[in-house]
Every structure is written in structure tokens, then in C-alpha cells.
Length: 219
Image 1 (cartoon, rainbow, N blue to C red):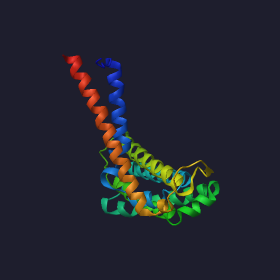
Image 2: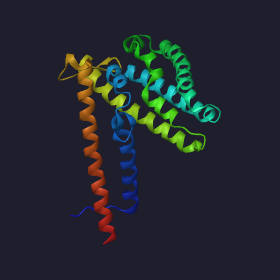
Image 3: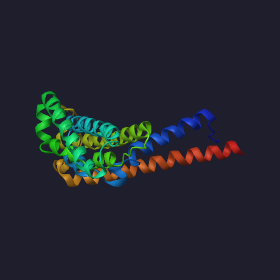
Image 4: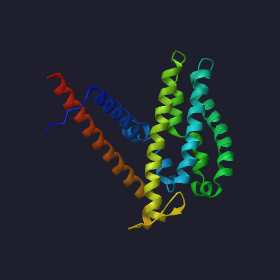
């Protein structure tokens, strides 16, 4: 029996494939390796993932929005000084807020909550903004970058917390296997590599199904 998809279903699959590509491999973290140290070192629990992801979203989006406003008045050489200063101010506010919500997880993250102010993804995005750029595409790029970072962060954190502590969000769960080395950075790099490879395989399968059924419709 031959599986055929309706045009609406093919359109939906294409949309899911684009979204999967955006979040899994077509993002600055997996494609360019940006902020891998922040992700790998701090992704030890879901609470830590919430802290780092929220802080990243605040710093990245806030700095890019300021870049849209200030790039029209600042000489290019001065932006490399102004944008990190803006990111640092946002980081301090985020640290106070998140530290009150997740005091124990904030301690687990350590100094990286402060180093997020100079993360490479935000600096590159802010420096790439030019006065002639339209606001909408710049904002969309910022949202895509944040989504890609958050997806990778939560996926790695979920697996590492379960394997290391046998819990999810601090709550113990029945588990078959534990791995004491899951909290080590090397395991984070290995796990992220496997997750990205799996995402590519799923994306290729979805793309193959879409192309096959499109050819069926054309014939």
C-alpha cells in the first residue's frame, strides 16, 4: 500500500522540517559552535537550563534591540565597547532576579552566570546590526538564535540530570542506569554531538518523505 499525503499534510511536514532545522542544527550553537562552553558546562540540570536560557534570552534580545537603536549614532569602533557594557547591565539585573528564584541552581551554575554577559552569540549578533537593516529581520534572527540555544540547552540538561542524579527538575524518578560522569564537560560534548546527529537524521527522513510525495503529486 502506497502512502500518499494530501497537499495540506505535505505543507505541514515542510513547516515542521523547517522548524526542526531551525532549532536542532541550523542555529549558531550547533552550526558555528557559539557558546558551547556555556552550554556544556552549565547543562547539568533543568533548573540550571532555565537560569542560563532565561539569562541568554534577556541578554541576547536586549542587546540586539539596543544595537538596533544605537548603531545609527555610534561609530563602529565604539560598538565593541558599548554592546558588552549593555549586556553586562542586563546580566546584573537577570542575576538578581534569577538568584532569588533559583538560589541553589544559581550556585551550581557558578561564575558562568556572569560570563554570559560576553557570550559570543550575542556579541556577533549585535555587531552585525547595521543602520540600514530593517528591524523585523534582525528581531527574527535574534529569536531564532535564542530558540536554537534553548532547545540544545534543555535537551542536554534533561539527559544529564537524569543520568547523573536520577531526577528531573529535582524530583527522583525510577531509572535503569546512572552515570556518575554525566556531569563532566566531556560527556556534555559527546551527548550534544549525538543529539545533533540524531536531529540531522530525523530532518533528512522528513525531507525525503516530503520530496517523495511531492514527486508523486506532480506525476
